[in-house]
Image 1 (cartoon, helix red, strand yellow):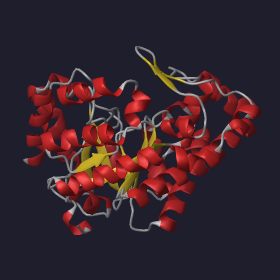
Image 2 (cartoon, rainbow, N blue to C red):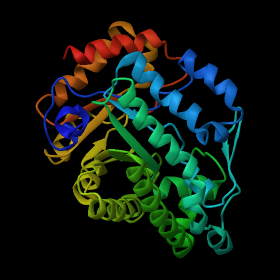
Image 3 (cartoon, rainbow, N blue to C red):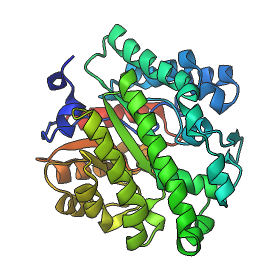
Image 4 (tube, rainbow, N blue to C red):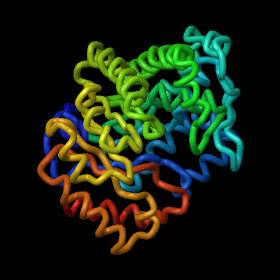
Length: 348
């Protein structure tokens, strides 16, 4: 089915589609009872992310329930270091745990040669989603592939998991910049390989999640967020000129304008804290903006959710826009509130 029939791709091509296309970050997940049933079958989280049948099923569940304009590959940004041979475990109540990478030996141990074989189950999931969308009558929905951006993935690898401050990573940026640069370089090349493989398998757009971009100073943001993103986008656009890239520099603040202008992306996602009116003034008019309803507003539902959503819609009317959240949907979200949100957006 051509781009002209896919509302999200039209928005990413610079068209002010209205009502806007809509999908939600983490739309497949623990807030859905049907997801929890499948998750119980899978064993651990990595097993779910590498099981083509189960991961395809959970990706399609929210499309069936809500009719979102896009399905996004069910996976995790840390599957890339896993594929490079770095340890990864998801512990209940702790989140991701990785061996902290703090020296040149750790960077040298990463093995790009094992990447193509390791990601084959993930590519089978992409193929399964694309086939499932067509088979179930959702051929006009867009399939989004994704990866973590090099800086954010490096944060988790250096810290050994999540962190409030990412002090070890930021410290390395100042005290051992060559070491951090070497890790970013490996991850940049691997990200291109990973996203290109997803596109070859059937992804029609791809998204780069830079969840911790906002912990950096402006100069480091340019070096560690904008520069690697620009390199990834340039290479993907060279190979796949018709496949758009969405970037999510979370907590970027006013740097969202530089990010959108310099990286070459076709869409930029706002986080919850971003003012849509200011973002619209900073981002070039031909670039689609995505976002940015607070996930907790969807938990609250009712008029609180409605007024927040309508304010975003009003600010974005007349420009390329994709309605989404400012971060991922959270487990306590009532599924009926998501249905109500869809009605609000469709009625805009």
